[in-house]
Length: 303
Ligand SMILES: NC(=O)c1ccc[n+]([C@@H]2O[C@H](COP(=O)([O-])OP(=O)(O)OC[C@H]3O[C@@H](n4cnc5c(N)ncnc54)[C@H](OP(=O)(O)O)[C@@H]3O)[C@@H](O)[C@H]2O)c1
Image 1 (cartoon, protein in one colour):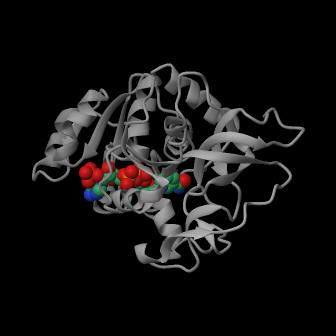
Image 2 (cartoon, helix red, strand yellow):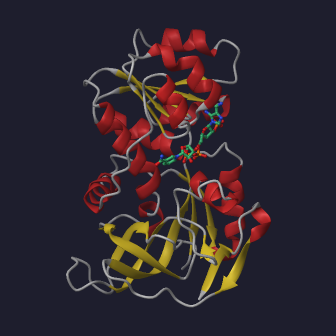
């Protein structure tokens, strides 16, 4: 089968279209024919070799860790059937940008009517992370959440999911993302304008918590706005710990993905796919995410 993958760690040049054997069935896993895969900054960190201690790679490996498609083989003791449309997280040591993909059955959910494979493929990483962070923070209804990096994958998911939990949201993003954030119902503060910290002070009397998808100086400048401990950072877990917060403990459960897919099918949340490329042009999808200034989500399709 064809994959867009890598046989050594490195920059964009190490990722190529390769012909490799189909993945072998494993207990507690599903084999799917891939229809769509979500692209995330973590895919670039894995390719660069920056995740070697945390994310096992078996060369040659396809890029990507979330995919949607048609079930070809499913474990007899799973609720899934051949022919069904599903989405989820890839099996350990395998990737998503491939004609055939192995999904971990415990991280898989059905695609409900009304949701496309591309939309569903955006759920496990960005929406799953934002959901886990919100449930860890457990903020009171009516309080205000500050989202850093609010225009990207995790940030735009957090903005929408927070409002579904009756939180107010102020989002920090570049000035180019003002309309995107206000259309999602958030107040927008542009970090690339000189007075942004003053604007943050004007945007809410108090902030109950931070979900951070930007890290670095943006987190440093805002950490004192929230009570100690009320920071969950996807981008800079170690820095969040310095301020009494933490990274996000990922649950990666099919049941959570199922709930998020139903919310998306019911228009409560939106995938906000900005870039969609066929597998032939998957390098463009990775390049779009590698800019570090993504708007919503980027997907690769295989139809
Ligand atoms: N722990 C986990 O399980 C987990 C899960 C998912 C993601 N992550 C990590 O979390 C980070 C974000 O992921 P993502 O998927 O949201 O990435 P993304 O889609 O690339 O979005 C990042 C966003 O940050 C914005 N940004 C860049 N510089 C900024 C700054 N100085 N201040 C505020 N915003 C800034 C970017 O656009 P603008 O500059 O135009 O605003 C972009 O929208 C990555 O490091 C990723 O690896 C961790």
